[in-house]
Amino acid sequence: MARYEIHGHAIVSDDDCIANADGSMPDALRNEADWRRFQGELDRAVLNVLGRYGHYRFPNVAGRRRLIVSSQADGVEQRADGWWWNPGMASLGEALRKAAPEGGLIAVPGGRRVNDLFLSLGFDAFHLSRKRGVRLPGGVPVFTRAWAMGSAERLLASHGLHPTDPVVLDEAERVSVTVWMR
Ligand SMILES: NC(=O)c1ccc[n+]([C@@H]2O[C@H](COP(=O)([O-])OP(=O)(O)OC[C@H]3O[C@@H](n4cnc5c(N)ncnc54)[C@H](OP(=O)(O)O)[C@@H]3O)[C@@H](O)[C@H]2O)c1
Image (tube, rainbow, N blue to C red; front, side, top):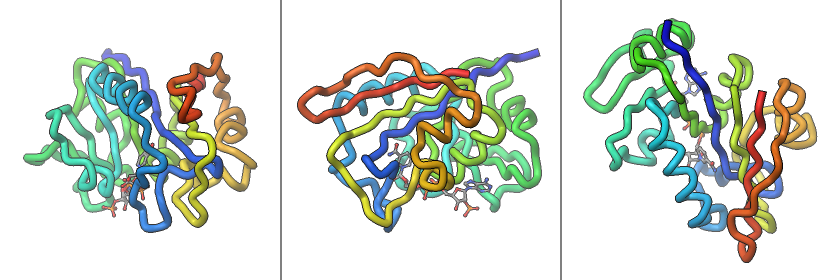
């Protein structure tokens, strides 16, 4: 039986946001070192799982294998632009068996509702980058319940994940990443 390891990824602001109120990702939240690390992780994975908005916002220029989460998919279906999955109609196991039958590392870049879904299904790890000094009032939180819990870190801890040592990615821009492991 194929084995999978599921890793989430996000870069967040001081107020735990992944995007502006309009759903766009502001330049203020971007960081070159974090972007390079993130792209490397996506390359390492056999499959990238993202929500429909993210799929359209970030065209698949690298040609990676994608699983797009959408209520508009008919269970699990293969389309010209990737595999599509409706979690209301098919299990994660079925989606992975079809889209990545060989097993391996699954990268989940989000966004919010996809992160919520995998938080309940179970991440094996979550790579949480923070860019200090950026606030996005009214923005999209990394998880729906991040604010209710007080922070993304507290929410991850409440789901049985444990932080490893933070790694500074860019001292000048105050960006670091902490990998939370099951
Ligand atoms: N800072 C970061 O690290 C980071 C990471 C990811 C994204 N972003 C930014 O955040 C922006 C917006 O993200 P977002 O969270 O608003 O959108 P998103 O997750 O990219 O897409 C949302 C859509 O995905 C589908 N979906 C998600 N979860 C689902 C579920 N459980 N069941 C069925 N369908 C589901 C739905 O599509 P249907 O409407 O078709 O049902 C939903 O409308 C992105 O465009 C990107 O700019 C930033």
